[in-house]
Image (cartoon, rainbow, N blue to C red; front, side, top):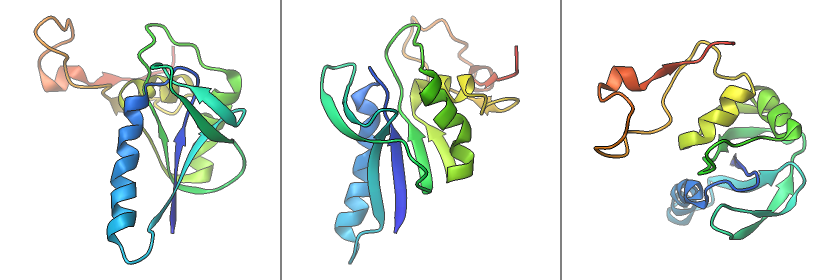
Amino acid sequence: MRRIGFIAFPNFQVLSLSTLSVFECANMLAPEPLYDLLILSETGGPIRTSSGLTLETERFDEKEFDTLIVPGTLVDEPTFSPGLLAYVRNAPQKARRVASICTGALVLAEAGLLHDRRVSDRADSGPDDPRPRNQEQRFLRCRDP
């Protein structure tokens, strides 16, 4: 069974957990479960999302994962705890794959995982979006400051 971890932090966007449904449905359709799904956080216990929903989480530990996923946030200028960043920084040693959803890429970048990689946080949001329209220009090249 493959273990999938979602890395929660205060005020993450609960919509990011919609991807959990893909694994849930795969488990339902398979003769036996394929995925062990966990929601993780630095402290374990309840974590409040940006919508005010509170989710129960498991504390970061040394478990290994097939995939660790960092959700996005709607906070304009988010700050991330040193413990969260340390866990994400070490995630490649615990997981075969580390991914993010939308602005979760900010966590990956701040943890140093995106150095010299092409990333995109999302497609444009509409006609008033100030970001470039050209698909190639939407990608950012992350480099150390």
